[in-house]
Length: 540
Ligand code: 16G
Ligand code: MG
Image (cartoon, rainbow, N blue to C red; front, side, top):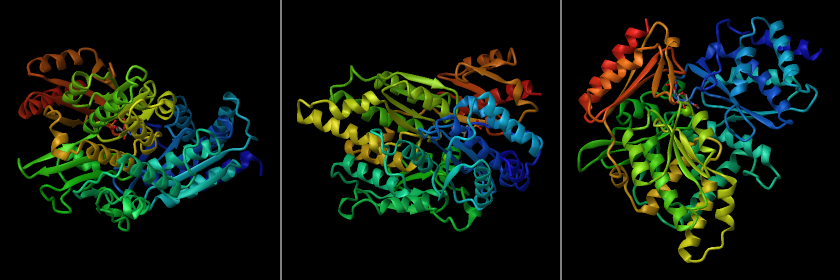
């Protein structure tokens, strides 16, 4: 069979359900039974992408993260372990929307011609999936696309999303001076465990940490990771809960980082215990939220992505200062409009670090963070990481220390570059980072929470007939369209103290989101309701 015939035959085995698909912030994500044909087509695109980029390995991750178990999703990972280049999202959308198998082959060939891709060049795609049962079928469709296009492929089976990102980068850097680590899941654990022990420097955290894994892939993977810390060097006690991956229906059910962040309370199971340090991962372990019920004040305290961001920025900023590199390296923090105003104020006024706001979606934050030598980026929902430039890594490793304190700071910084996932936000790696910082500062969660006080805020989902009439500007903080709508929002915001509000179309759902914050809880609620009212009037 010719290539074309193979592609068409494969597509006939994995038919597409006709409807309009779009490669969004999380790739293609929807009910799993719509995804078989989509995944086949994503396989074709991944093969093209590998051939376009000198046969480097491309990743494909099959997951729907924090969404219900019946959903699934598929997204492409670029050679350095970052998200698919934005320009290519259009090509993905075009391939997936091809109306027939023949059209699919035509679009595939047209892309190859337009992008000057040699279809005879070698290609490599590696992939993994979360614990969803539908992952099996989708992986089969993906493998068929890779076979049809003569693409070498490796199935890493069940992984967290950040593990797949790690493996892509490790594969492409293997044997080079920039080697990212051993090309295996065990290599990932070994790298993290070694860096964790190295950054902890013999410090211990006496209090237990309860980790809620949303009954997703993070549970078994975290337990596997813990086995790689040498028994005599384990610095903390972890209690893994909600780690049932055998009953798919409980995935993300009343648990996980998204539950805690949106409901602003602890998962009901296990029964919350005052004073216990807790954190939650999401279903594919790329988001992290800390929380505890303070026994003294009897309040629930949530430490979200903004808190992790400011904690990391403060710790790393101090280390860079002690390492004598403050004038040499540019440190910055990247947030979205959802970042609590109090966190932005703390970072700019107290830590004296620049903050840049980008539109929602990890790819935007990641891209801007790459512009700093130390770029700290987190979404309030707990997704984020810290990126180090080559200059920063070299400075940490090559500066000759003039004092023991400077040496200590340089060593810790160098270890952090191995501990922190450089490809994408990684809940397990971020959790280790938080533990390291708390141990170094000798802080409990109350100390951490006391660094600043969050402004009360409220997020509302508004269903409208047509969300496409809403267009944003200024990193989603203002609406440019429909004209006149923003002026009405401004009028309302003015009536409240320390208030801020914005509306944006969701990138993952057919709805608008409205965020409001103000000096008191009731004012934040009131403002959110009023702005939601404006949005629903303009959205008809
Ligand atoms: C996606 C994004 C997440 C963002 C969320 C916003 C990635 C990997 N994920 O899940 O970062 O916060 O979308 O959803 O980029 P929304 O557009 O529906 O509000
Ligand atoms: Mg996720």
